[in-house]
Image (cartoon, rainbow, N blue to C red; front, top):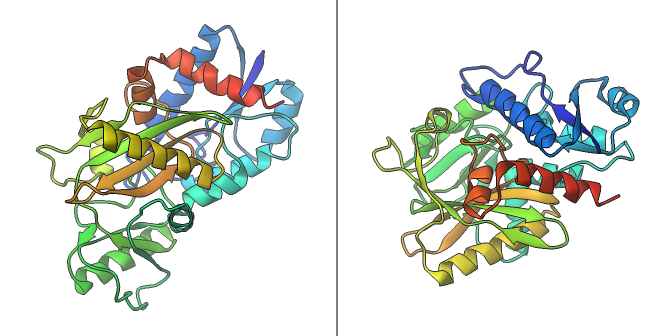
Length: 320
């Protein structure tokens, strides 16, 4: 089988290194690992950089399936654009559709869909500028973040705010830095979990991973902590069976709510009463072995990295 591996050409990616300090290295390591895993499984891999000529390259390569590992040609916001291009081809590709990526990239849209499915998520408000009035129903502390970014971009130790003065300072900073709305939501300060899901018609939920922030400057994921891979983790998470089943059931509902395919990763936090609140869903979770949560959870669930990459490839191929 010939697999077209679509990837981000980091020489053309314009992400500011101060905003995303680990991004380029992570993208390159991930692509190299996926290529090696496919070759270990005896697939022929055709490397295809994502750019304006991508569709022509794919057609000329005569591939059977596409493994989309591209997080955007220039920035993360273009992740969905690449998927839209791939949908113009009559070739199956790994991952979700254009509409699903848009739902996932825009966190407020995800939260609306969560609520429709009865999935608990923090109350929130989208700020298009710093002159908007704060919704009186929102309660401090609040957390401020870019509305459609990933990898904790735009989140630092000052992102959790306790009054309107610091709220509007952070809202203004996010809007100016990322050129997009700022998402403001009630901060849920308890334990944090991430949940990996794989499948299409039938879904499999991996062992749940808990993110550990002991001795960290914050108890939430910042871009600095993520870049340094400084947070600890426990997988399987030390939780009782009732909470585990509840989290996995909600995770499947979230996957279906956004009409996802093949794989995704859901982030959840507990409040002080151990009630879960679903924060966001990553429609193209990282696949760097030894670093990204998704392959960590797969391994703890008995799936090696090479087997994981092959399973994702076959999920797409079998849609033919």
